[in-house]
Length: 263
Image (cartoon, rainbow, N blue to C red; front, top):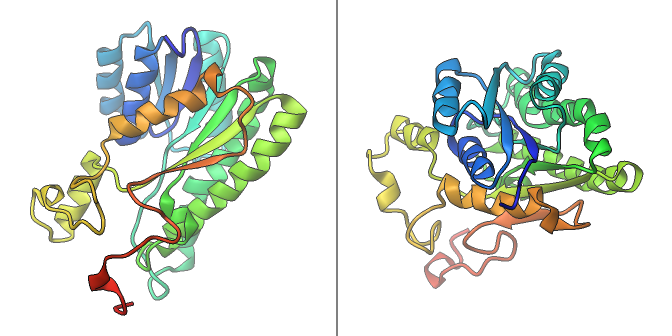
């Protein structure tokens, strides 16, 4: 039981990676306060995990009152707060020609500003137990794809925040801050997004080696498993670190010969 008796707040936890993290945390002995947008999905998750192990709070994290409300709900329900997982994210395609200011502001609000506000609200309570923060980023934080411009910028900001706070908060408050940057993950939303883009319904069964040397992309459960180390006491004094979860080098990748000279 690697997370026994820990209380963990997870944003964006009703579906996908966040839901997998919630499931794994409970399996390892934690109790979770899960946030999301679709109330019915939240209720289903609590039924699955058990009301004694999980509770939900449905709110848009960009609501100015959301950070304080989420933290207060966790404290009122469980009496303390050991960890925050900033997982909620807004994902959308855009490039230099389609990234307008409202889109950029929304992307930053969800992916960068709200996580900061939640950390600010949780910090006094995390410091009492020498707790931690785990931010869920993206390998696109390192530069990203041309059609993920706004998203990549927002995840780059999150990564810089992790590096900065991971240093200052650990020294001043004893609170570790780290980040995981997942690669391509097979969530239910990703399946739907690709179908809406015109791809076949089982597109994930035939992904080119250049994108998935393993012949498949990650499952949410694999990302959740990686989270355990960062949320547990096994992490020790590790802080301000970013771990890429990908099948190939994100920077300096060796491309196949067929790609040489084509870019």
